[in-house]
Length: 225
Image 1 (tube, helix red, strand yellow):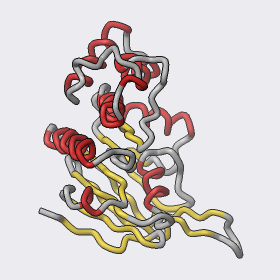
Image 2: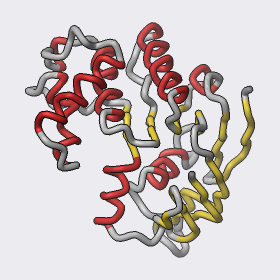
Image 3: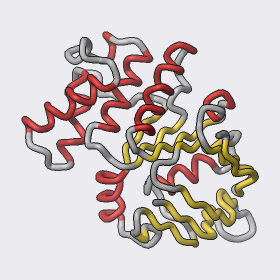
Image 4: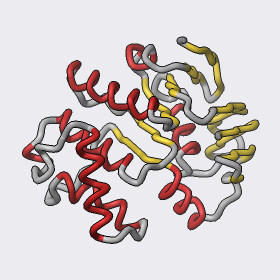
């Protein structure tokens, strides 16, 4: 599903250049549960931006589900993000004046989904993360764990094949962290490709495959199974 070949991302080319990614070769198969691990400054966030089509590499190849996305225009990248990838961020990024259903519906508006179908998909997604009794609650009426479950529901409502989670448990307590991980593992079991960006070794240990990034390069790539 994902093929990356000699990917580089260089900021400030020249004497003071920063090689955020320095020749990444990577394949991720459909249905993988992968943790990409690294400390701050390792390049893992830059790699996440590339995987999520939020940025383009300086050089190298990135093929996503048969499409060469490294050379796409901004509009084409936006289309890929909209259809292929569900994003989960550390900060929840919920709209404060919308209830849970409204927050989950919002990305579906940009996909051109009809009002009735949007509502149905949003309610199904919220039920799938155990929030059927919180659908009319706004973010300030929910715990951090519940807000992150709304964010997960928002990411999966349109049924994208790839879930890209950036430090999805970074703001959560231990109990909520494990609840979110169980939801991500269930998404994986349902056939989604789940990629988790994390610095947390406990989170990484629950993935099937661990990719360690250091100084813009892959240092280790191994299976936990």
